[in-house]
Image (tube, rainbow, N blue to C red; front, side, top):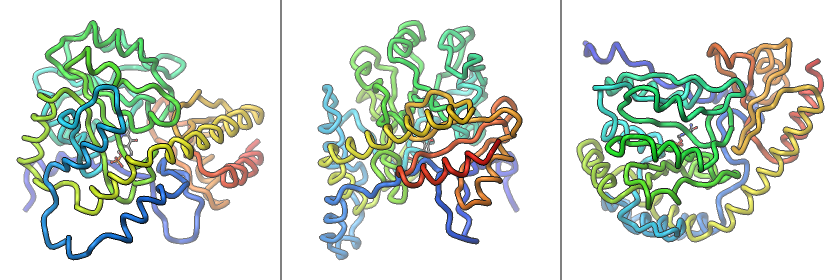
Length: 352
Ligand code: PMP
C-alpha cells in the first residue's frame, strides 16, 4: 500500500497541544501578545467574495512590503514568501542541498532539519557544539559539505552567534554552496545576517512571522537572498504548490509589515522579561544558557529535563524537554507575559 520511501520518514514532533485542562502554554515559542491592531482591521474589512479567486501565486505585494520593512537595500525580487518558514525551509533543502556531500548543521539544533534531510535523501553531519553550547564555525570548514544550515540564535539553546563569525564562515566557505541562516528568533535581540547579503550571493536568510509577528496560526514565512536564488525557490515552489500563501494571509502580512514598530515594542518587552526571568532562575541555582531568543534553555543539577517538565506540567504550565543525549537535562521555556513568568517562577522555586 505505502511506498518504500514512505517507510523511511521520521516526522517532526511539535510542542504538544493537550486538551485535558487549561495550561499556560510556554512550549512552542509562540508570542504571548496579540498581532498589531491593523492586522485585525484587515481581517474585519476582508471581503469574503475575494475567496473565489486564487491568490497571487508569488505574493508580490507582500514581498514588496517585507522588502520595504527590511530596508538595507533589499528589493522585492530578493524575497520569497511561503506557508510558514517550515515550508520555505523545505523548498530551500530541495533547491540548494545536494546529496553528493553531507549537509552540515549543529549537533543540537532545530529538529526539523534532519527530518527534511531524510525526506529529500540528503546525507547529514551533525557538528558538535562547544562545551558552552555555542556554535564553532571552524568545524563547518573541516570537511567538504553540500551546504550549512543553522538558526541564529540557535534553537533550542537560544545562543546568538555574532555576525563577525558568520562573515568569517562565509569568507572561507565555497561560494558555490549555500549557507542558510534561519532567523526565526532574530527579532528578540540578535543582529540579522541580512546586512551580509550584499557581499555573499550564496547566503540565504530565513524568517518567520510566527514568533516575533504573533502569526503562528496564520502561517507565513520568507527567505531573503540574491534574486538568482529566489528564482530557484520559485521554480521549486511552482513544482509543488503554486499558491502557498492564501489571499487573507498575504493582506494581513502587509498590514503587519506596515506596523513593524508595534512588534519592535512587544518584542523588546519579551526580551526584558527573558532577562529578568533568566536572572531569577540563576539566583535559584539554575544553569540558564545566555539567550537572545524568546525562550530560555535551563537545567538544575540533580534533575532530568523530563522530571522538571512533568513537575511543571502538573502545576498547569507546559514547557518542553528534548530526549537527546547531551541536552536531556534541560527544559526549553518560552517567554510569556510577566504574569505568566512570575507564576512559573513560583513553581520552579519548589524544585530544590
Ligand atoms: N525555524 C526554527 C528554528 C524554529 O524553531 C521554527 C518553529 N518551530 C521554525 C523555523 C518554523 O516556524 P514556522 O513554520 O512557524 O514559520
